[in-house]
Length: 76
Length: 155
Image 1 (tube, rainbow over the protein chains, first blue to last red):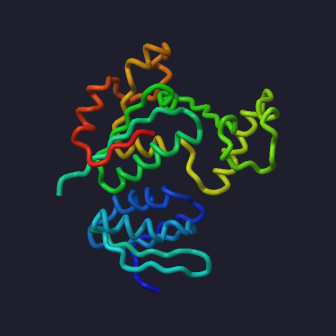
Image 2 (image 1 turned 60 degrees about the horizontal axis):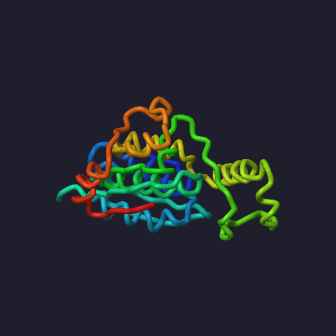
């Protein structure tokens, strides 16, 4: 299991809530810290990619496991 | 990099049409956009403290229905309220945020909400019924921001 500092479970939430919750969670974290996000919305795969590119936070990994999506984002 | 700007005009006040402005504005704010929504005509209903937004299948043949209902039946008393509550239930079940939640996320993210003063006067709306923290203005107010925006949407 990859290292992360905080975790956000956005399972069951639909667009745009996972992104908005992630933004909020990142807001309370220090630069360089890593947030793991768990989501069930299939649209979140492309959305977190786009979110990272537009905000400058780094998407370290994005994977699907057992019907859930896991993202690791490093705060800018 | 300069902050990007998104300007939205929200003109509709039904449950389904309430979503695009609030989804786009809250997401844009999360992406670092400075965002404004100008509410005019029926869009002003989206600023009420107590939202009782409805959706209607009348005049909207594309609305998915759990079962086919003839158009004349859709016009029966209570049908609109029934369909609206069904829609809200489905949204909740699917993890779609409520309009209230998206709106408060917009407020939290400092999306500027502007009510069209002309419409307020036209429909004799009581501004005490609207949420606090909104501004009132006209077309020129909108253009001051929209003129510098990167994206401008009419919804």
